Every structure is written in C-alpha cells, then in structure tokens.
Length: 218
Image (cartoon, rainbow, N blue to C red; front, side, top):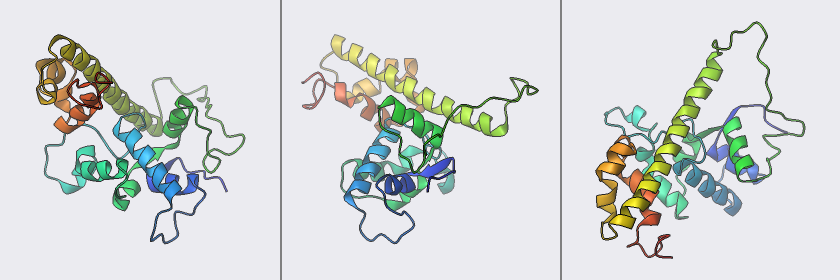
C-alpha cells in the first residue's frame, strides 16, 4: 500500500524500494537494499539529494546530539557505506529524506518513481488559498524553503570549489590537493571555510592531476 507520509529514512526507502518490509528483523540486509543505501548515502554526501537531518557545514560545538545533525559526525560510516564495506544502521535510520526532494532527485536522474511512495495519480501541484498573502507561508512551507536553501547553498559551494580547483591546477599543476583545498580562492572566494577539510577535499579530489583516477589523469 502506498505511503502518505512526507518523510522517510534511508532505511525505509531502501527496503521498500526493493520490495521488502523495513519493520522486520533483518540480521542480513539483502543486496538490493544495500545497493539502495549506497546510492542514497552517496547522493546525500555529494549534495545531490537533500537530507533533512544532515548538514554539510562545520560544527564547532560540543553537544553530541547537535553533532549528529552534521555530516562530519557520520563521515567514517558514510565512507564505509559508499565503499560497500559495512552499513551503519544508525546512519541509514538517521538520514531522513523529504518526498518532494526524492521526487526531484528521481526526475533529475530519469529514475521511475517507486509506487510505494508515489502511487498512480499522485501529484505535486498545490494551489495556495486565494485569501492567503503570498508572503505569509505556512510553517511547513517555510521549513521546506529553509531546507532547500541549505541544499542549494551546499551545491553552489561544491560547484564553485570544483571550478576554481580546475582553474588553480591549470595554472599550478604541481600544487598538492591539500594546498588547493586550503588556498585562499577555495576557502574565501568559494566559501570553503564553512565546510570541513575532508568535505572540500572530497569535492575536488577527482580533478587533482596527481591522482591516478582523476579526470585530468584520464
């Protein structure tokens, strides 16, 4: 039966997308489900899929609960998941995706919408009441807009860092990956200072001419 809820965890999406019940006791996660987990977590980490419970910005506080809202807290688990080594169940149950964000991601990648969340006849159109001022958005719409601002800002920062990194390496091909990440252009001009070093490094590593698997090397 299609779900009416507007938010699901990666755990729930992965199982339901593969036709399995996420509420059962799973001692071994089926391979199709693991593949869904790897794809979704990587897309979240690459800022291509909005996640309501994970942010890309640095966290400098000491609150363990607040830290879980930032992607750096989960980085080892994310890397292990994407590499296909292990699935941290806490991570995939913590990462929550909004239905409209999932819809936009599927549309962008030309992926058929899964019927468990998008039954036949499901639509995304919504008309605001005529007597509602345009600037007076409901609280749900405001929170959705704020989340969209977060993901758009992360995506713009990533694109800017990649483009500037390509430019830097075209002028200074001997610069190391670390030096480029910490360069004034990346940190100040592209907003890299708002993100963890490992996040920016991951964004631009594919363009490092010294890396054997980089786009430049290929």
